[in-house]
Length: 122
Image (cartoon, rainbow, N blue to C red; front, top):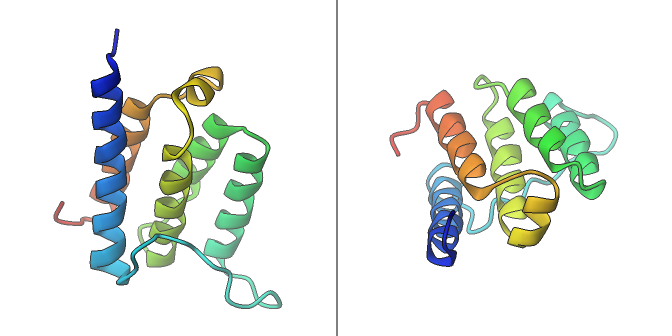
C-alpha cells in the first residue's frame, strides 16, 4: 500500500517534470494550451478539444488513452497539450483519481514515456 508521503512524492515529480519541460521547451511557467484561432483548427487543437471534453466528463482513463494514442512526436504543440493534461489531472485529489481508476504512478510513468517520445534530455 502506498503511503501519503509516497503519493506526495509522485505528485511533486509530475508537477516538477511538467514545469521543467514547459519552461525549457515553451518558455512558459504553466503548460496551458490555447487554441489560437477558432476558424482554422490544427491537429493539436483537435487533440486538445477531445482530451478536454473527456476530462470535463471525468473520463480520465479514456483521456489518457486518447492522448497517448493520438500524440505525434512530429508536432511539438502536441507536447504542450500533453503537459496541460498532466498538469490538470495531477491537481485532482487521490480520492477522485482512485474513483476513476487512475493512479499518480501511472500518470508519472506515462508522462515519462511522452518525454522519451519527444527525445527530451530529462
